[in-house]
Image 1: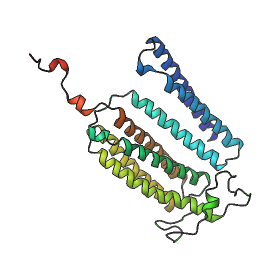
Image 2: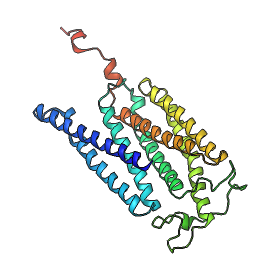
Image 3: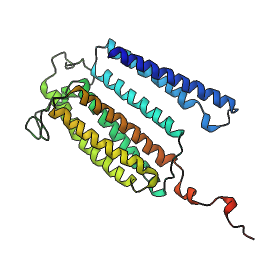
Image 4: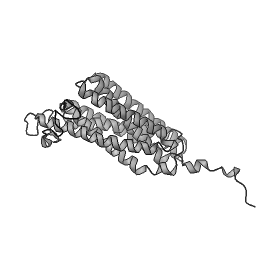
Length: 277
């Protein structure tokens, strides 16, 4: 499993190098005048994937220290978001109306909330706290169980240990799980509201529908990890759902900013307009 992961990481790095070389060649060939061929973003991708590789190495050498593993996960999903943004630049998008364009700030907030929730989920995974709450909607039979936030959210410590070197108490794992679970409802409510707003615009409708579908999948797989005692297959699907939400949120943010204007698309070309005598 470890080596397959490394081979795929090397393949991603190689493809990013190909993207960067192709971008530089096309930009130079265009006389360095075509804005759509600017190579700066693909070059930044190469630097980012090198950073990701460094954290991958530290994940091994630092013995799965939770903060390092969580950053490694977040960097991986950020790299995915950057690739999705690069892909969005190459597509032809359905025009977005002024009402859809007004979602720039809400879409940005949605991306920030999703990023925070994924970070909390990564903290659950890297601390092996997925089974700290054995039931739902209660946690170990209580609405607010006994929790240890101080040790649970101390970032710089070894796996399963406190910063002082003692074993991490169960209450710390419960706090990690409970915060991730509770904040999930905030994210769900906000993304549902955001998708509902986006459904009103033809240019955003497809993305919004997929967001609602994947969000429902995430809720189901999250509950399944509790009721089925965290089967690995369900956990992997849950991680994949998070990655899909990242892609969809990136697409939504790109479209509300850079998709053609609906008003501009509806206007007749200059040659078709009547000439004023």
